Length: 227
Ligand SMILES: [Zn+2]
Image (cartoon, rainbow, N blue to C red; front, side, top):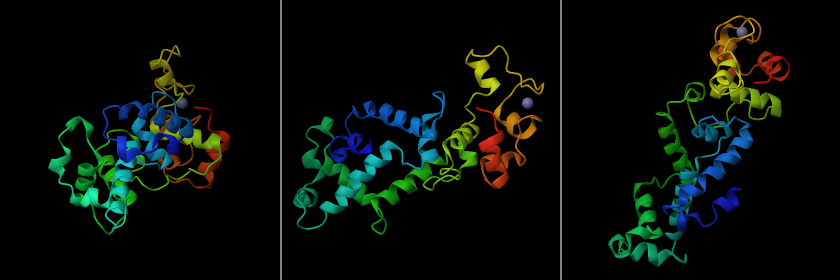
């Protein structure tokens, strides 16, 4: 759906209405990850290794700006001979030229626009408060397990985001009468499920969400209950 959602982005991505597109992109990413609706939306790009929509749009603007710097490009004279002050007479328009000029002035000419967006993504991810950041500290690389069969991929994403059909979550959402685990623990949380639960925990605890060895893969595919 990106081909539709990002058609002509350098023209409109600074519009005040851009945010109307994002829920649809987030819904598509949620389908890819099969995460539940309460999952923080900023987890989806990291789980799918797809840059956040805003960075992709900014990258498209920079990429077009770089191409327009080449003599002969249709926008070359517009970009190189127009002062930013000349095009700001309608501030609400947020036109392409000053945006591209600004992005180019801050960019590193030795790397492409997509790589620049990756760097910015990583810089922003460092401050992300969700639990997923502890398990996947760096963005811009495919997380382990992305090629797993769908069932294991679903389980892994629920374990990594800590949002799934754990008893504590179901209880919080009013879908269960108790947060207790079948093993007798008062609250079945992700950590209880992975580290302590004598019924459900995988052999390697935290490894189940980070290092995916053969035993963990087997557990995700065949032993882990639907969460
Ligand atoms: Zn338990």
